[in-house]
Each structure stands twice: as C-alpha cells, then as structure tokens.
Image (cartoon, rainbow over all chains, first blue to last red; front, side):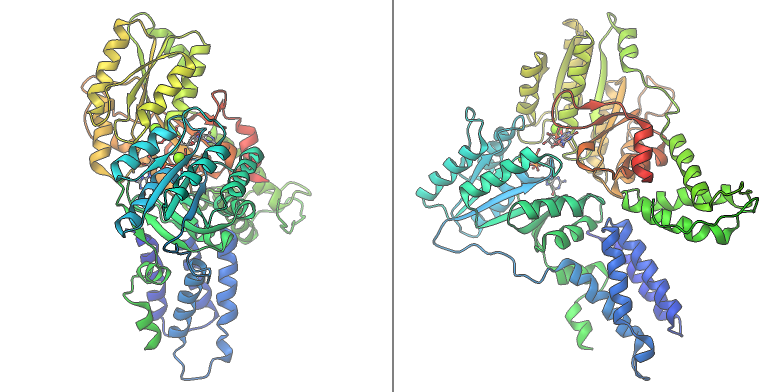
Length: 306
Length: 306
Ligand SMILES: Nc1nc2c(ncn2[C@@H]2O[C@H](COP(=O)(O)OP(=O)(O)OP(=O)(O)O)[C@@H](O)[C@H]2O)c(=O)[nH]1
Ligand SMILES: Nc1nc2c(ncn2[C@@H]2O[C@H](COP(=O)(O)OP(=O)(O)OP(=O)(O)O)[C@@H](O)[C@H]2O)c(=O)[nH]1
Ligand SMILES: [Mg+2]
Ligand SMILES: [Mg+2]
C-alpha cells in the first residue's frame, strides 16, 4: 500500500548502487537522480527534492572518507536520514490532556477530507475512553451539517451545529461553549474548505481560531495533492497555528509525497493517515516506520546499529 | 523564463549537446508546474527529437527555439480533437427523451458542486433540468443535492441512502421522461480508482442506463495520481458491456475543478489530456454556480511556460 512503489524504486536504486563495485562521484549522482525521480513521481515538492539532493551531497564527502569504511552503507544511511528528516519536523505530536476540555480545530482545502476525519478522530478518542464531541462550523457547504450529523450519529458522538445561523464564528463559539459546560474532554470543530487565494475565507478561519482558542489546529491534506501542496500548506500555517497534519485517502493509488511538502511547510508532524471512507479507517502515523516501510526494510533502528 | 544561457549563432545545426541541458531545465520547470514526471519527460523528449538536426535561424537562441516548439506542442495537445457541444446534443434529443450526463471521479474532487454549476448553466440556456441523487453512500450527499436543487429551483430525484445507484438512475430517467425534463444530471459516489467493486458499480450505472455523456471530474490540484485516476476511470467503464453501443464506452470529457486554487501550476491539465486525449470540457473556478468556465488554451499555455 502506502508509498509502496516509491519504496521499491528507491530500494532498487540503492540495490543498483550496492551492485556496482566502485563508488565514485558518478555513482552518487546516479543514485541521487534515481531518488529524485522517485520522490518527484510521488509528488514531493521539486524545490524540496533539489534541496535534499544537495544535503545528501554535502554529507557524502567521498574523498574524505577513510579507507576501509563501508562507503555504500554510509551513503544509504544518509539517504534514510534525509528522508526521515523530511517527514519528521522534530517537534513532538500534540497530545490532549485528561480532565480538561481540549479544543481541536480542523482546517484544509476543499474536499480534503476534514469532515470525514473529524468523526474518525472523535471515534478514535472515544474508543480510548475520552469524552468527545463534534461541532460543525461549516455553514457554507451544501449539506455540511447533515454530513456531520449522520457521521456523528453513526459513531454515537454528541454534535452541535445550526441550520439557521450562517456565521461560522458564532456557531463554533456556541458549540465549544456548550460542550465545555457539559464536560467534554475533546471538542473537535469542523470548518469549511478554503484556499489561500481567497482572503475572505482565510480571514474567517482566523476569526474562528480567535474565538474558540483551539489547543490544536489540524491541517487535513489529500494524499493525491501535487505541487501546489507546499504553498497552500504554508499559507494555512502562516494564518493559523497549525500543529498537526492528517493525510487522507491513503487507500488510493497516490504516493502521498505532498504530505512531505505539508510537513516541510508547516513544521508539523503527521499524526494520522486516513485509509478509507469508514469511521474506523484511521491509522496512527510514525515517520520511522513509514520510511523504513517506504524503503522496503523492516526495522530501521536495527539497520543503524549494525 | 529561467536563466538559460543563450547560444547566439547563425545558421547552425542544433545538436543533442545543445539541447540536453536546456531540456533538462525545462523538465524541472514543467514538474514544478505540476506536470506529472512521466509526461514532462515525454514532452521534452518529443521536443528534443523534433529539434535535433534542425537549423537555427540567425540570432535565434536554442532556448527560445525550444520554448517556441514547446508552446506549439502543448497548444496542440490541449486543442480538443473532438468537439463536445452539450447544448446542441441536448437540443437534438429534446422532446424525444431526456439527455443524461453522469458525473464521476474520486472522492471530494467536486462532482456534486460542479453538477450543480452545470445545472445552472443548462437552466440558463432554457432547458428543464432534473438532478438524480445517485450517491447513496456518503453522509449528507443527498441533502447536499437537495439544497442545490432548492436554490436552483429544479427537481431532485432521490430514493434515500444505501440503495443501488444504477437502478435509481434508471428510475430517475424514466421519471424525467414522464415529466418532460430535457436533461438528467446524475451525481455518483466518489470512489478510488483502484477499488474494483466500486468501479464495476460505476460501469453498471453508466451502461445499464446508456448515459449520453460521462464526465470525469478531476482536481487541478492533483499530482502524479491524476493520470492514473483518469485512465482507470476510462478503462473501467467498459467492465460491464453496454448492449446499445458498438464501440467501447469511455470517458467523454473532463471537468477540471479547483482551478482557482493552483495559481499558475496548471500541469494537471496537460498531464490528463496528454495521456488520454480526452478533452477538458469545463474548468471549475470557484464554489459558486457561475464558476464554470471554458478553458482558455492560450492562457493555460502561458501559465505553464512562464
Ligand atoms: N477513500 C477515502 N475517502 C476518503 C477518506 N477521507 C475522506 N474521504 C472521502 O473524501 C470525500 C471528501 O471528504 P469530506 O470529509 O467531505 O471533505 P472535507 O474536507 O470536509 O470537504 P469540504 O468540507 O467540502 O471542504 C468524501 O467522499 C469522503 O468520504 C479516506 O481516507 N479514504
Ligand atoms: N475552490 C473551489 N472549490 C471547489 C470547486 N469545485 C468544488 N469545490 C469544493 O470542493 C468541495 C467538494 O465538492 P463536492 O462537490 O462535494 O465534491 P464531490 O466530488 O461531490 O465529493 P464526494 O461526493 O464526497 O466524493 C466542496 O467544498 C466544494 O465547494 C472549485 O472549482 N473551486
Ligand atoms: Mg467538510
Ligand atoms: Mg458528491
């Protein structure tokens, strides 16, 4: 599944390197070209790829490597490290705190999978014994509240929304207030889809953030997104305090490289991936396993210790 | 356009060596504009083959020749080979039977919204339009369509959730015939192109009801996955045979949505049309009913090459 093809491509590029006996400038260049192509096919931002190739080159100083060192192994490790670095912003993932209300706001482009993932996340915490609730602050999209209501009902989670009030800021505020009073521990607020080219929509998003003061803002990204990912993600990050990412639709054929751009742009970790349309189709994300899977290897930590 | 070194020569023959670095830069440029890597490679390759051995006219740089050729090639790709005139086709069957259009595509790309825009457009052109709520799976899908129908003052045919979409479509078409509707717009559930049972179900819906026009709705945001989506949808339509047709059932046209979210990263348009030859019928350029546009090939080519 996930990034499988990309993994195979990179693995075979690494294997090809292992098969050549002489490691020189050209071998490294060929390897980097292969890795670059694989990442490009997976929709990783072109600028990130160029940067990554440079980083790897800087790290691999062939002429300075002492004789007897396993150069191939070193190069391989550098590629691993750089890939992981791309997926891991180095900040710990946000965790809700027991015994107090944790407000989580979902944001993202149109159709990315926010509303679906809101229920999935609420259900995830509910299954772990948390007292959760959902608020529909999407007053724009036709049928948005019905969608959230159906999902919430299916998952057995309390929800709030309004048919009459058209101001999403008011609805968000009211919903959060109600559930805080009721002692909900995790209150998830769904918002409309929006894009950086529309200032009004971004302004609205900031107002919602100001009025509900979320403890975490989750940026939801469609795994099939191409080169526009980086700029869109950057725009969201600069407008609201994005703290985590959820990548959706990983059950499709897309390689999910846009996710890497999303991480780079928002400096936020991917916390979950969506793997289907049903409520339980949400998996915890782990950068290390993700990359070792991606490269077709089992456990990465094992590799480094050898 | 990028910082190519301009080789100023008169009446010189263009060599492979002249072209290579320039074509390489072009490939990177196209990839940054969100052209799928495979397609970008093929494009520069064909430009390269066409130019090798050609004579440069006086004071013409290789770069500018490449750019000009690329412009011609891309324009040719985007210029439709077959013309789709929906208004004329609807007019042709008007009074005899309703004309039927199916909106298909992966999850969240904008099928239902752009169906509503097409409804607005057809209504404005004097046709009596009906919507068929054949997404019987996604929460809120029927209410979403109902809301649009109310706003657009048209009828929506629905049979609730969980039912067989193909037979609802059939009933809707019969009902439309009885009630003197000119067009039936059929909304379908979003599905991943690698989900075989769901792709078969789409094929059944299309063929069992001998739809007049099948549109693939795709996002301009999509990266390398776009070509795979479109090709798989195209191929899957013939999974279940249509007895009324001699030729293989295929996707007739593309609606490329969210064009307002990509700035100048127009590559998805090129990737999709290049790989299948299926024409782009409309661009979706926003979330309002009037945000449905014809593609301006010149301006797309300009965005791609600057
Ligand atoms: N296959 C698959 N489909 C998904 C996944 N997550 C969401 N979807 C589907 O993607 C479509 C869009 O999801 P929504 O949750 O409505 O997206 P949204 O971001 O709330 O959309 P807007 O509110 O319009 O911006 C729906 O058809 C969902 O069922 C996933 O992980 N896998
Ligand atoms: N910016 C922008 N948003 C669009 C456009 N077309 C659709 N959308 C938005 O994209 C989101 C998804 O649209 P839908 O029409 O529900 O998509 P769908 O393909 O029917 O989704 P599913 O039925 O869940 O698979 C909504 O928020 C729409 O408002 C467009 O051209 N531009
Ligand atoms: Mg939503
Ligand atoms: Mg829909």
